[in-house]
Image 1 (cartoon, rainbow, N blue to C red):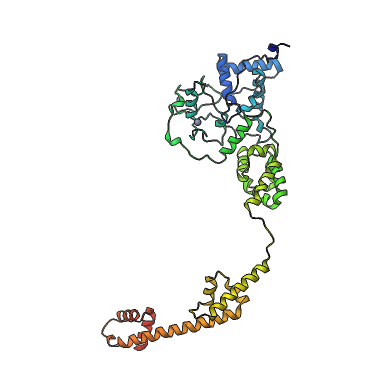
Image 2: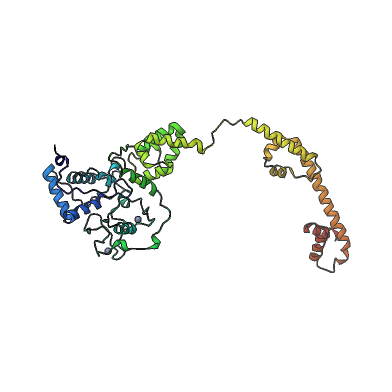
Length: 421
Ligand SMILES: [Zn+2]
Ligand SMILES: [Zn+2]
């Protein structure tokens, strides 16, 4: 066998996708456009040619791909992936799609791939600046992604000049940065209001996932990863806790969790448990082990609390405080206030220290009685001195003066004046 024989000879040019192994990997729809371009034909012509070629080869005609979301994981998208892989001999094309999620995510592809193109104008500018061809990144075509992680710009999905959306399959221009409708340069759009500092919910999880998909031909994702994760986790942290968490994410009991959740639900799941989505899908048991490792470090190690010992200590401490207050010179607080001042429950105090508390109550009442008597005496003395004003001046101003001079509440001065009438 010569070296030449070892080279795979394919019907179509072998074109390498851009950005393999990185988050910036090219999307399959963009790849098809570039493939048509290098063949010097329109996308429509290339697709027709491929359909006929595949029919000759296998006897079945692949579906028209105008309505197929090539970057996704539907049955038709998987078939087109197979056709393109065979036609170009490029084995790594699956890295340009989220095909590895077939059998993992919802069959209806809800919440996964966009129906129209989205792009970051600054990324197009970067491509052009280094003399590269412009291409659509796979990450831009996923619905949960709203931003470019490099430039922190919100992705655009329509031409700012003519307002048209850019369909990924139909009437596409030769280069990704040219609007198919008005041939405006999409990379020229500059708008400061597109800047977003923080990523949206789930965006970083999708990035991790795409980086992983773009770097391997055999992702090895497990179906029913969430279920297996839940089962493994309940062995580590208990069934009830896992059941509550699942209910919070899926809003249904754990027995009703979809076998193939939507991509958005998977993201919510990974974000909730703060686990890497790829690890969850590759090895759910390992992911469960990892996060159960984190539990003891977050929460202090629980030990059986010796209630009686604690209570005994605290009761003794409070009794000493009470005794100290009762034997002291005062002033005394009322029993409820004394408990509150010492952060102690009044009910508990009455239960354990009823006698001491009663003593404190008696002392406090005596103190209050004496204090009130003193006030009344002071008010009466002042009222005697002001007695000549009664009948000449308004009562209100007399009462006010008495209260002020005797340093007493106004109501005491008023009632004293009333009784003096
Ligand atoms: Zn960008
Ligand atoms: Zn346009």
